[in-house]
Each structure stands twice: as structure tokens, then as C-alpha cells.
Length: 162
Image (cartoon, rainbow, N blue to C red; front, side):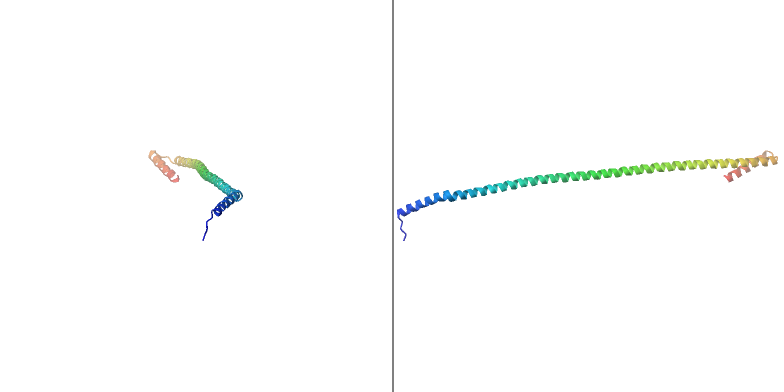
């Protein structure tokens, strides 16, 4: 069986205390230093991760701002292109209207010239008919009724020729 002697218990307690002091001085100090280094390393890594996360958030915000700016610029480019297209359309339309007015004026001038030429031709024919009628009157001596018949005939002939 086990025997308990007080001297053994005391030496055991003293041994344990000496061992504790030696372990504390040599082992626990180093272990605590290593644990503190690890804790510091972990804290540094956590801070680096936080800084990286903050940097990523800043970069993401910058990216979103640039993306928003690019979208606005694209919208501006599209609206500018639409405005230029509308302006080109308006210019083409006003040019076409100006061309149409010019062609119409030219056609009206040409029609007026042709009308003048036709009137000159009609006047010449009327003059010829008047000369013809005068020559026929000069050949015949007529009274008022025959003069009236001749004028009516002359007007009928003039109407048929025009």
C-alpha cells in the first residue's frame, strides 16, 4: 500500500514549486513570448485584412464612379449623335425645300416665257387674220349685215386657231 510520509509530501511540494519557478522562468516566458508574437502577428494580419478590405471598397467605389461616368458619357454621346442627326435631317429638309422653291420659280418663269411666246404667236396670227380680213373687205363692198357676218366668221376662225 501507499504510505504517506510528511517529508515526502514536503519534498514533493518543494520540488513542484522549484519546477514551477524554473518552468516559469525558462519555459513559460518563452511560450508567452511566442504566444504574444503570434497574437501580434494575428492582429497585424487582421489589420492588413481590414486595410485590404477598405482598399477594395475604395476601389469598388472608384470603379462604380467610373462606370457611372462612362454611362453618362455614353448617354451624352448618344444624345449628341441624335442632335447631329436631327440637325443633318433639318439641313437636308431645308435644302430640299430651297431646291423645290428654286425649281418651282424656274418652272414658273419658263411657263411665263412660253405664255409670252404664245401670246406673241397669237398676236401675229390675229394680225395676219386682220390683214386677211381687211384684204377680203377691200375686195368686196359689203353692207352692215355682210360686215357683221364677216366679223363673226373672222372671230370663229380666230377661235379655232387658238
